[in-house]
Image 1: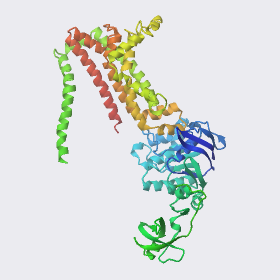
Image 2: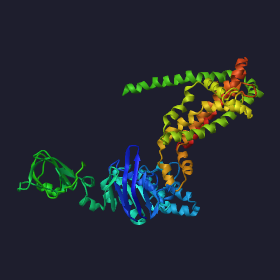
Image 3: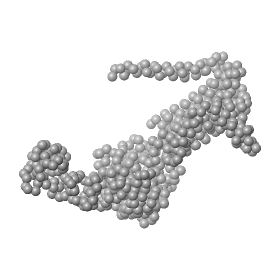
Image 4: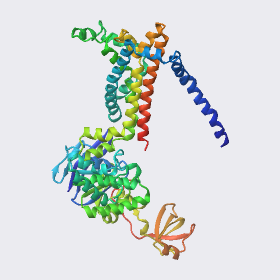
Length: 322
Length: 267
C-alpha cells in the first residue's frame, strides 16, 4: 500500500526534526530512509506509524488520510532497533499478541504463529523467552510479531543497528528475501549507506529534517543532486569546487602533461582493493582506490611519488560543507 | 592484587558486625524477652481483646493504604517519567516530603486541616464524617507517611523499560490501557512489588503521625504499634514484648513473601 507524506513538520522544542517534508512511497516497494543522526529519518518513520504527531502536514496510507488516526488503526507493523520484545512472554506469545488483541480464534492463532516462525526461521523456539534468544533471533521474532497482524505497511527503525557486523549482513540479505516473498510495502531507517544500497530499491536521503534526494541506489551514486548526497552515499574527496570519487582517480608512474605530482602517504589493503591516501604538492589530500593488480603493477609503496589525474569529477552549483 | 583479597575479610566482618549490632541484637532481644516466661503468657498477652483489635486494625489500615498508594504511586511514576510539563520538578520534590517531615508534624498538620476546628473538619463533621480520632484520619496519616515508596521504586524501572514495548503493543492494535496492563506493568512488576513491600512495612510500623490523629482509644483507635507503647507505659512488659513480636513476625512475613516472589522470577 502506498504512503504519501505531505509537508510534514515536527519540532521538539527548538529543534526541528522534520522541516516541511513530502515523500511518496510506492506500493510494494522496499524503501530506505537514509541520513546521519538527527536528520529526521526516525521521526518521519514514527509520523508514518502514528507514534508521533506532525505539527503540520498530512499522512496518507493507501489513499486514506491517516493524519489523525491512532497507531492502533493504521495497519502498520513497526520494528524497533532494540527489538521491544515483550520479555515476560514466550516467543509464541509475543508473535500471537496482535492476533489475540484482534480476537482471532485459537486454532487460527496457533497455525498462523507456526507459519510465521517458519517464515522467520525460528521454528522450535516458540516456547523460549526473549532472554534466551540471540539479538538476531529476537529481531526476527519482532518481525514475525509485526507481520502477524498482516499490516499494509511494514516500518523498521534501524532494525539491524544493535546487531554485530556479521549478523547484520545476514539479516540484510534475509530482509531482502523476505520482502520478495511477502511484498508488503516496507520502509526502513538506516544511517548506513551500504545497508541502504544493498537492501532497498529506493532510497530517500535526509539531512537536517529535509529530503535531499530520492532515487534508486545506482541513481543516487551516479547522479547525486548535491554535495551532501554525493558525500553521504559513497566516499568522496573534495578539491576546491571539484568532488571526486576514489575510484575515479587515475594513478601513473610517469607524468603525461595533464597529471599532478603526489606522494603516497598511506596504503590501505581492503582485500580485493587498495586505497591510497595521497598528498598533492600543494598539500591537499586525495584518496585513490585501485584494484590490487593495478597497485602491484605500479609497485605502490608508502612515501613513493606518483602522478595522478581525476578521470571524472563533479561540481555542484551550491556546495555546502559535507 | 593481594591487598585486595586481604581486604575482603575485614570488610565482610565490618558489614556483618554492623548489621548484628544495629539490627539483629535488638530484634533478637525482643524475641528473647517475649518468651522469658514461656509461651503461655505470650499467647495470653496477644489474645486479649485490645491486642486482637489492635492487630486487626493495623492490618485493616495496611489493607486500605497499600492498594491506594500502589495505584497512585504507579500513576505518579508514569507522569514523572514520561511527561514533560511545567511544575514537574516541583511534583518530584513534593513526593519526597513525607521522607523529610517528621511523622509527628504530619499528624499535627492533619489535625489542622481535618480536626473539629480545621479547614475541612468542620464541614466534614456537619456531614457526619469524623476524620480525626477515627479510622479515616489514621488511614490519611498512614497514606501520607508511606506515599513515596511505590513512586520511588517504580520510577527508575519505568525509565529503564522505556516506551518501545508499549508502542509496539499499540501498533499491534492494543489500546493504551491494555498495552500498559499487559506489557508495561509486567515489565515493571519488580519495582512495584518492592514498593508494595516497603509501603506495607511502613504502614504497619507507623507510629508518630498515627499517635497524634488517633486519640489512642484502647480497643477503638489503637494500632499494634500504639498498643505496644500503651502496654509498655502500663509496666506490662510481657504484653509489650509479645505485641512487638507480632509486629516483627508480620514484617518478616512481608520480607519472606518478597524473597519468594523474587526466587520464582530468578529464571
